[in-house]
Image (cartoon, rainbow, N blue to C red; front, side, top):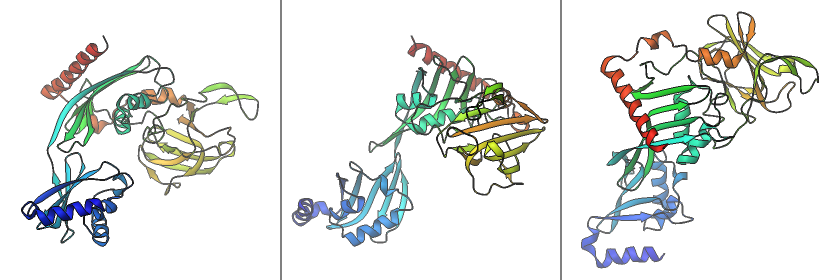
Length: 391
């Protein structure tokens, strides 16, 4: 109420200023965006209409204490809103017509370097989140290497990662991390590097980081999106395992990924669903046939993904079901198995080898000449920064 009075007095006694005046507004504690507009001489009815017009462009649930915007006054009447919503993105709202127009603002881009060493019990995702405070950046890093590294099973304490990324900041103080430009992971079991070039990531030999298989059926965008430490493998591939429920020794020709109930499970490669249903102790099971006599199976699911049925064609990375504990299971996990020409093989060894098998149409895009020189130069630059930071 006090602010309304102040605005009214400014308009009344300083009409020259009110002719074309941008007023900076800050959303206060406990206020919604509509409340803030009403508190600045805009009727609740009009404020509600403005919010409705903005819903297509702005998530108003994200408008909290400290959010800033501007009101454009002409002759004592609010005629326009200027809303800097994201880094470099400004929305103009004409209060007379409720038209919304997007504008681009000035953005400063700088490069930042991050280096981290995994500690006991850490995941790569958790370590990057802890260092940067940004889950999207952590997800971006592990997604870059989804065809090269199984971050659930191949990482060890003492492994290190490094990357150079963009940091964006606009004239209103909004900031965020942008694209990862160069990245590498150096571990006891696996090494990989990536450089962004013209819309894709390439390794030091100029090959795209796209393989025929994903390195894991549990996607980093589901299990690891939250900043948590996690159990890697609850049970491995073995010919002699004591069954936790039956109490007898028998082969376990798969790998159990312990994961929270409902975690999305993804097909590791393109294929066709050949079985979907209850399968004894496996509970809810899906089998997918791939090229080359390869069949993958996913057991103990809590439910199936919508649209999955026998005969369905699935894409690599497509969600086919969700982690559960159906059948004979002591807790939520995915029992993942692979058959090659009718015989079970160790899934971890298979994916370690085949996730790096390059798709033929992709190999044709191998970088050469100056493009390859650029990739190598970026990796050398990252190595130099790592050497300085790890002294």
